[in-house]
Picture (tube, helix red, strand yellow):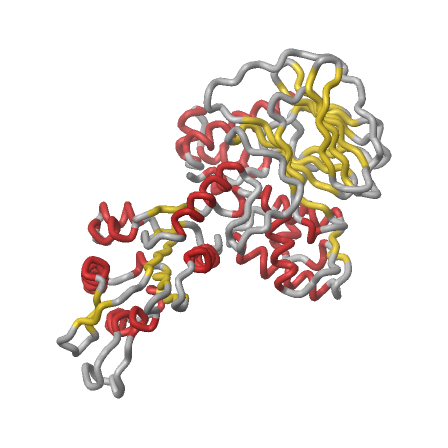
Length: 456
């Protein structure tokens, strides 16, 4: 594949310190979903040529005194010279190179269009996501990282967080995992335990699923006859996890008496079973997880601040799936392998629906979606009709307006900026725009913007 000449060459503007770099992600490959995605840095790059090749490759060189990048993808529906990205006059432009099957941007076929952060590019049966800016300095990554489940990502910022988790894992520091339901908090906890090298077991308990009067008995054990129904001695989860790791899932649901007892256990490193007068020393690594805002609960006197301090030796926030579309290919590959579907492929329409869906239930929803689709497809090609109704609806939604389309583009860009500034607060956006909230909601529906995806 040869590098095409650039239309014009401009000096790449200097970014302010800490502003970040642009990246291009291979977000999904319909015919090779088990190979995952890829990350390409566009830092100091003036032009990118994308086309068909025998293998996934990224070759860097110089053209007319400027840095150039050639991206090759083994996609039979992609032209040898399919599309180009150019950094022109401070903006990145997507330009079709006379391809046979066309170049698509955010669901619309384009010949030439300006790229916005998060743009979804479709070439042949391969999807790309353009991001600008993201944390600077991340190298190209063309293969799925060989990482434990839950510790793999293409996003530079989240990758740095996961590297810190790796270092924390080998210590005894308690870790607090926060994130929405289905973001993989238990998977992350299991990965931490695996990296810790602790010889004991990994045990977990859903603190919100135990009746309040039985929480202390489940955690700390009880003596026979300590209460009605205690017909035998029970060691409790802390003693059962001796030498290992105990995950307190949904720790924000612990009742106040149990919070006080847990604080004592963490401070003294010993447990006293219900009905016993003797405390027993323990060696247990404690991890906690919750989808609730513990800081807000503590401020409202619904969660002990001293317990929060004890649990937050290291605090990790797991982003929702809608904030890490770039990882969808890697997650899908791992989930398809898990459900035993090594030969499954996807139609372009099905892949487009996966990438446009907001995934309100996160990775857990993606897992159920892919498992069901693989069964319905009989291990062959997944079509749109094999996907859940909510995911099909995302794929059938009208195309998003292109950045080259004047007033609509400007309005959508303004909404995105204000949603970002307000953390997805529609009322705040309406106030800043001087418009009625109902009008802002109409625009959000028109441009298919979900305020939840902008929440911090």
